[in-house]
Image (cartoon, rainbow, N blue to C red):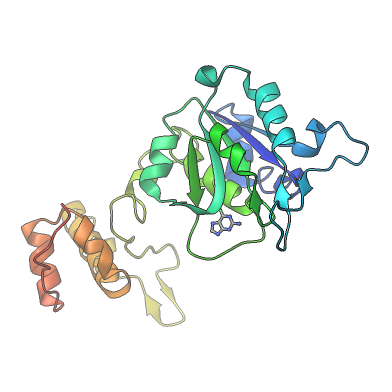
Length: 250
Ligand code: 6GU
């Protein structure tokens, strides 16, 4: 999958995409990440990309011309032939695991990092989707773009070591993850639960499922309304004092 990121601050991406799992995925040819500096698509001496808002008021607005120029030069002149373009903005739809999985189906994705007080409204004619990463305001859309690339890349086969992993982890199952342990068996008087040493796979799976349920009930009970629960799941949750909501989304 190829990502094209349009930004005023390409330097912010250096390092984030050059280490760890994303670098390995790039080396393996599983993902390509191209960052494009919007300033390179200006024609004035000072490479200006922002201007004051019509109507007055504070702050600066991202100018449309460098953005249109960059999108058309890099992604092509024909809108019908271009990959989807996501604008990162706190006004967007809140990003989640379903969106990550869906974007990962695309061969290409372009991301435009929003900045300043906002972006000239006419730029929205280029944009396929507006995405926010949560209900707080950041100084710019670069960190959200990194979040999107990382979360989407994990759903591309081969990027994460264990092919089952992205589909089993927190949120992908709709539940939070169960606890994990590795050696040593006993550390500072804390022992690994015996069940994990039993070699009994069905019991271990039931224990992990129950611990996921326990953790989700304690930390994110809202998620339980959106997940398909078996009778065994419900019985376990009831033992913990869970009361089934009469309104289910499943
Ligand atoms: Cl996508 N952009 C900015 N500037 N702030 C945010 C955000 C995006 N998502 C959450 N906060």
